[in-house]
Length: 220
Image (cartoon, rainbow, N blue to C red):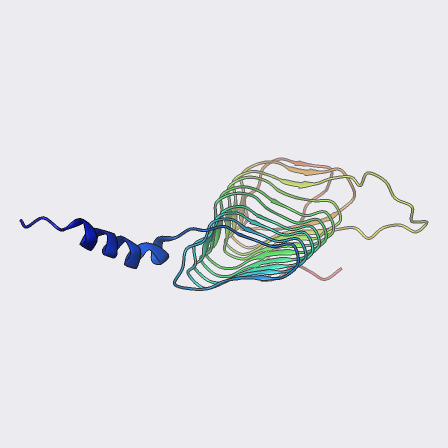
């Protein structure tokens, strides 16, 4: 086979370089958009949201004041924000934890989270998704929706302090049809726990499960 010349090899490398580049994107003020057709490293901003396009591959995603939206079939590292929600589309794979402090987390059909899922003030909703580790919150509702699988447990932690003079609302925890929670369900505060009769769960501490057999849990 005829050997390629050095200039030709360099030309090929330069031409193919952008398609394989995995440069980090970092900002202080401003949103980040990861567009289809490219590969990215870490996406990091302070004041701004982060949007990942369909099928895009990125490293970890991190913002402070902003939400994160990940489109279908994207692949990311861990996803973290402080003030903002996180929404994952269908068949997304997150290679790490997915967490927020003030905001909700939603994962759609066929998505996989290879770490845990955690909020402080915000709900968690899984639909046909798989989480390798624990699902945790303090003040949010949790729905382990139809066909979802949690490899760890479900944990609702006790708030560190409260200055409210009125009783706080009890979080709703729903384990839906054909859902599986392999670990224990631990509740350090009062919750309302609904478990579908077709679901499989570990040991429960701190709550009395209320069984249901309809498509959705009863309204309080």
